Amino acid sequence: MMFARAATRARPITANARRWASTEAKASSSNWGLYAAGAGVVGLGAYLYMDRSGTPPTKMASQKPLPSALDPNSFVEFPLKRVEPYNHNTAKYIYELPEGTAAQLPVASCVYIKSTGDNAPKDAKGNPVARPYTPISAPDLPGEFVFLIKKYDTGVMTPWIANMKLGEKIAVKGPLPKWPYKINEFDDVGMIAGGSGITPMYQIVKYALEDPSNKTRFKLIFANVTEKDILLKEEFDDLVKKYPKTFEVTYTVDQPSSGWKGATGYINSDLIKRTFAPSNVGDKVKIFVCGPPGQMNAICGPKASIKDQGELKGVLKELGYNENQVFKF
Image (cartoon, rainbow, N blue to C red; front, top):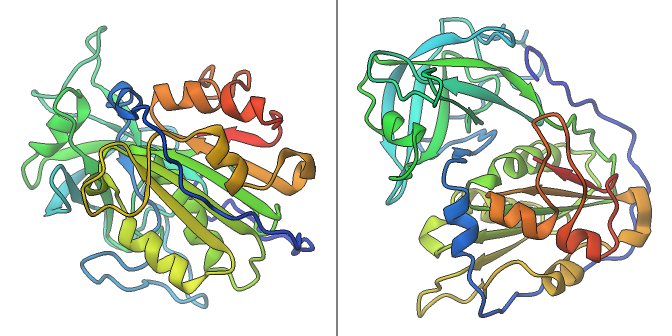
């Protein structure tokens, strides 16, 4: 999950001619329990080749890759360089890496962040709290990496991060490998994300869509409480405009404003069935899911552990998908 891109590029697979149209989900049931249950899961973002501050791509293909500043076996400390507000409860936290290094995270992967210092939050055993997060900066960005983090008042880690002062340090270990994505491994990829579970989805689509050889069609269903909570929306909308034949996104919110024209309500079987390729296409389709525990339980069943996907349950099983077709982040 680091030092080089783990995701290899495969030969294109013949594209399936059939397209599955996205439709809006309208339901009276609430998403709120899904997001409240997952309040501690907060690592956001992925792979922004140009962030909101205008940071451009950092490395041409002909240049020698910078070494990674990370260690997959040990925590390494990095100081907070600056903080940039993002929305009403989210900010970008930029941490400084040693000169001449970069994060170099492959797709798809994340890192563990551990609290440090005398005021660091502790778990039940008295150990510093650690959580998985994904940087939103380009893997090869020299000298720094950026996290987009939503503050949860009831959380443990995010209030501590939100109160960090410039120069204070976090401890980072990684990368933590997730799914070794290969270009054109699938004809169709469906993505279901809730709240901060958008992280690996953006990482994968950014990587795949910007590859000129990509033929895979990506369809994302992204659920949030309100439209103000939709993170990386500008980036996703830009990708839709740039790659209309290979990327579609459906936003659904639980508490829409009077001017909201998108989908409302929870992610249900009807929306999934109308949006994604059906299960009977076999290994040509893959469904990625990431969200708070309540959503995971309803859509695909919980993961048994970090390394164990657990039994496939919920809506996706009811729709006929099997465990080889679904991956839980």
